[in-house]
Amino acid sequence: MTKTVITYGTFDLFHVGHVRLLKRLSKLGDRLVVGCSTDQFNELKGKRTIMSYEQRKEVLESCRYVDGVFPESNWEQKREDVLREEASIFAMGDDWVGKFDELSDIVEVIYLPRTQDISTTEIKELVASVKQDKKQELLNVCDHLMALATRL
Ligand code: CTP
Image (cartoon, rainbow, N blue to C red):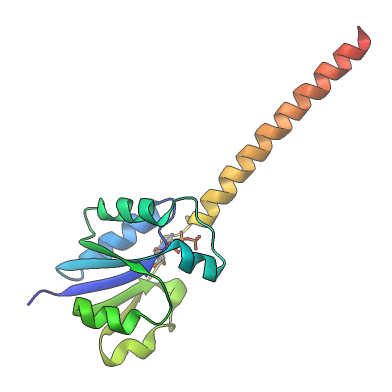
């Protein structure tokens, strides 16, 4: 019988932490399906993504470790998803420890350690700080040019 693993996430700005998690999850069974948070659901969670749901889904589908992607549009759908996909393992990163234990009557619930030092939030912060540095550099050039102009 096919052993299906199910997981969930936003997977915005797909990064190596995502790849490593999906790789480890795919090794736990024969088939890995991913519930990808929709834009509306993210809005509800107060999360704004750079990539749209369609783009995030397309990237996930092109990942060799992923066999299927479906929309995650609310907090309550997980029990139904597990039954529909006939999943035998429900797995999440350990930032969710304990949060889904109530599903353990129908599926094995596990939490895997996250990859250190990378997250979508950190990538966004890094890009924002690079943008800020560039802005400051431009402001410095402007100040310099103004100072030169006043001396002419
Ligand atoms: N994940 C991981 N290692 C990381 C980042 C994420 O194992 N360094 C896992 C999460 O635990 C989750 C899945 O990847 O099970 C999807 O996480 P997601 O929230 O989309 O990614 P993050 O990078 O954590 O995004 P954010 O910073 O917006 O929370």
